[in-house]
Image (cartoon, rainbow, N blue to C red; front, side):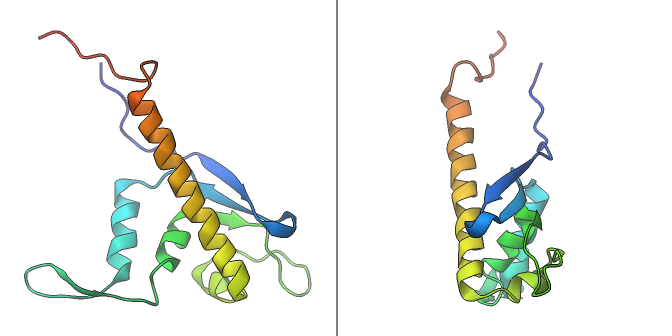
Length: 129
């Protein structure tokens, strides 16, 4: 019997400074990963190749694909709903911290997946032919 190849919709809480946090997807689906790439493309030529990437979307699309919520608040202390617009209203240090947290999360998940592939406990058993 094969393994389930669908992405588990599990969420992970990533800590930020000052007691804040991000709630993020553990992993993106293939469709979500493709959408991150597509949203960064500025133009396409008839061959289907990207002519250039949109620097305004670099990083933003990946953050928006992963983050489903956060603990950030406005000046009056009211919770801010997460969106691209509210992300871009944050100061540069906060934006950088969020991007760094996502990057570290993705790297950790890639290491975890690589370990699962090499660990005999998780390795799939080949059937005899």
